[in-house]
Image (cartoon, rainbow, N blue to C red; front, side, top):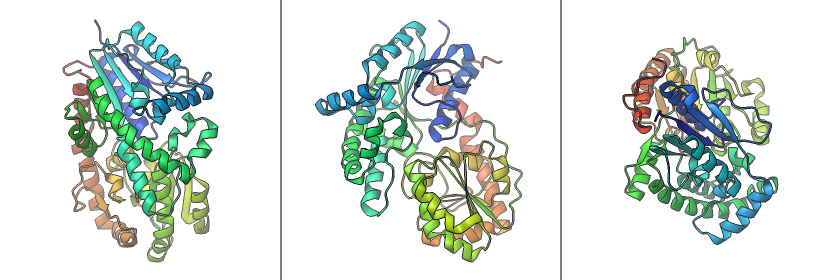
Length: 430
């Protein structure tokens, strides 16, 4: 039987403007190149009337559970089953399960890919696929634990739902965003999702994470070698013809409705931006990414044109060409930030905290084009160093070389072929 692939997700792989979308986009493109776009199927959970994504695959729409169904599942199974999670309950309808089972029965795919445990809960118990894969993204148990620890030690509020808010009934969103509610909810969800992550490994041939540290952690918890790392397959990105401008421009990239990104930019504006203006008068911070919060906008306002909140920018090449460096002052978070990889690919120097480059195998001495410092009080010195032309050029060259060595297309596609059982299969285009 000819190879056929099915990807099941609640997230469109386009635009590839976040880490999750970038990985899903890479999976679709790779499978399409190997099998042909007519043999790759993408089942997307979406409301009626939503236009099918423009991707090299056959698309199918799955009906999203309504708010009444979501609340019924949440109030029913979540209370009676201590192994079930809140995020699964948002997609836990029998109707959705039946749609997925019918699609699998009809297509009889040889490769099935489910996006996180939310969709993986509906994978047929007796899979027809030769290779059945669960893309876990991050270890949500670790993500929630870090959020809780950070909230316990910092007087800062954040939205615990992030991008997942669109899948939560409106009445619950306002409730869960209250600190008195989300802290006990996160603790419950952390403990439950940890059990689910461990149990789910037994149900799939491969379980994929984007962070090698988390791969090692889940392997230790499960004793399974089925847990592997998957890297984002970025499009071919030529190193930027860089010409950093004067006054210098620094860039922050990331969706601002994600708690770790919002907190990072706000912390930078409070703790570093005044020092940056003192040390490098006229320096500009360009904040690129959709979903800016009211708090962020208010913090940026006193700096006038020196802080530019620009929203989503489809073509980053001109931004990177002008930039002195990309900034990633994250104080919490988990998983590899795909935008960081794109920055390295462009040959742009990076200034980051440890959480921002978690899971990226960087040399600690900055020889891979990235200067890492968790103490934002010391960032003024790093920013001055990054502006110096000779040092900036060294960092730029090192960043590009690091990306090609670790995340270049040849290395990543070889890993994808092995993960999806396509070793030796010629590209459909060849």
